[in-house]
Amino acid sequence: MAGSEVLSQAEIDELLSALSTGVVSAEDIRSEEKQRKIKVYDFKRPDKFSKDQIRTLYMLHENFARLINTYLSAHLRTLVHINVASVDQLTYEEFIRSLPNPSVINIFQMRPLKGNAILDINPNIIFSIIDRLFGGPGLPPGKPRALTDIEEAIVRRLIGKTLESFQEAWKQVVAIEPRMEAIETNPQFTQIVPPNDMVVIVTLQAKIGQSEGLINICIPYLVLEPIMSKLTTTFWVASSMAKQFSQESMDILQRKLEKARVPIIVELGRSTVTVQELLDLSVGDVLQLERNLADSLSVMIGQKEKFKCKPGTSGHRVAIQITESILGGDDTDE
Image 1 (cartoon, helix red, strand yellow):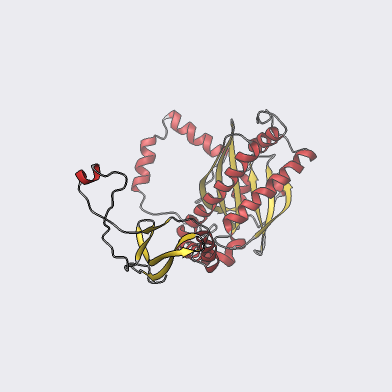
Image 2 (spheres, rainbow, N blue to C red):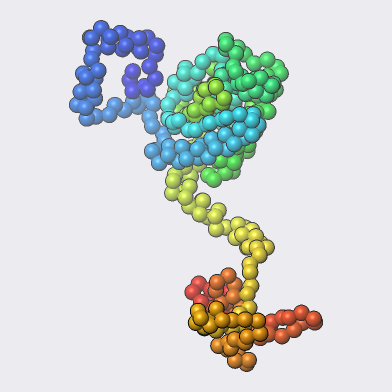
């Protein structure tokens, strides 16, 4: 296979035949793998993405999967489960050869990044969504077929909403404006980059009702090359923290806090009595507080003393006048 990760059907049949006839045993294969201490590297298909970049793409599209999962669950009103199955890098030719015919292949742009990307949705998933939107139980047709004009119009609307979620997920790394270019059904007519160019394939496992299938996102290396430095977990965390503590977010948080209601209690004083004295209390009894008339009263916010005040009246209402702020702990900025 010369380092390729995709087996042809003939190679699969030959391997299964060798295992079943005893020519090759599973134990021999495992022992051979243990003995091999080198890794084959094919210079015709070099690795373009580091493990850190693959991990970042995985995290990024996990957020994308959550967004479209929420949208489809509410839109279809049925059980939807979508999660990231894998993130791999391979040649564009290998990706195209793995797609069935007919397929639902959506070509879209990631402006301002140059070039096109592909969003491939398994026909079972597409026809299940269409059947559900048309009032059916959400079952795909028994035999694969191409989309009709009406079905294609529904799919275009669905893809538009999906690309909005794609834009939302990617804004953590770069601000993009995805725009759908075309919908193709034959993989052989879809040529966005040369066959030997490297691409990253994000595979999502989707289950809608009783139907299951894969959603593949194919992004060529040439499209991501200008932002490769941003596809790292370090940049991801740094941008998340910067966004979290930006001045705009702090202003929003402050406005929300200013509208929050908090209880304010003015404590006139305290007195310590025995349990027997408490039991003997009756209407008209007088308790002597541990405070003089000239002393300031305590203003309690929650369970903490925050101010000192003087009692008085304002118009016909009882009121207090703040005379002192009490600072403590991390409250020096108040």
